[in-house]
Length: 282
Image (cartoon, rainbow, N blue to C red; front, side):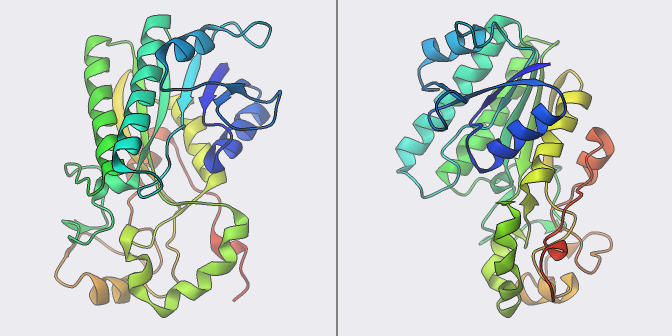
């Protein structure tokens, strides 16, 4: 396929672009940053630029079969709340609306683990967490992700042939980040904000590829995390220390992810292949 990737110069985006190209797809990166010649520079808050760039750019491309929307201010606290809301909400609206107008029906978009209630200052309703309970945004960044998912629900109601898949990515990591992981064990609360989760960028890219290949019409959302936690300490010990009294559903495993990826495994065929434990010598 020819695939438009927005934000393809970012931490996850770089790996998504390279993975999709390795799979044989023709990938066009729309971003405000990146090497000259490797990116089409677009302000995603300008609808005219967005629909024009997706429709075609001179000799670079002449349309697309699918869109992967990753571009955003990528976390809370990096910009003012108003700037985060305006940039992220408007960019996502423009990309989804342009896709509809141009007849592109296959879209994968980056949502976030934050809609689960991060940083869990209010404990989660149960552990492991999954996609079954209502969104609990606790920041402007997370609120926008929730509103983006809500917008997608309505757009597929208007257009039943449209497929929009929201991937709730955990904290994205590259192999060079893993050297710091053994230090997390000293303080269980230091990473409790996302239930000690993470996702290797290569597995994040795998999830995008699986969603492009396997998602059906309509809207769906999936938690995308590594198969394990960032901790060497066992889950039962961590949960008892940091979240006493929270309902535990099923077997916690020893170091199994507490951000449930069961749905992504079942529906998308997602299966993490990378762990920090493969990169760090005990």
